[in-house]
Image (cartoon, rainbow, N blue to C red):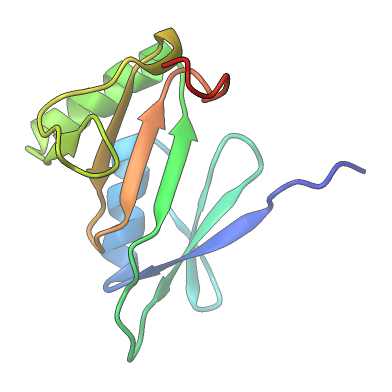
Length: 130
């Protein structure tokens, strides 16, 4: 059997709001409760399990999602409609721009807990040939 990522925990200051924000922005089904988690299922059998960061600071994590051109358009339109800040780079220096690495499009933005989310239309590879 091939090894696959099945799920990861996303610590959040408000897991309900964070899971709803994510599912709504990405056009996914509503989160499902599983014990202390709110699970958002992605299309590739991976689950994001949102969990309260009780008694600890949320450390920013980076989550990158490969999407189709049509999905990019829809998600990016929701980002703009919600007036979220977005950047072309992970250092958040190129505000209000998208990137075009490997002939695709990509953009970074933050979720409600400060995690850096990224959507890309082409997988990264062939390092150094942006």
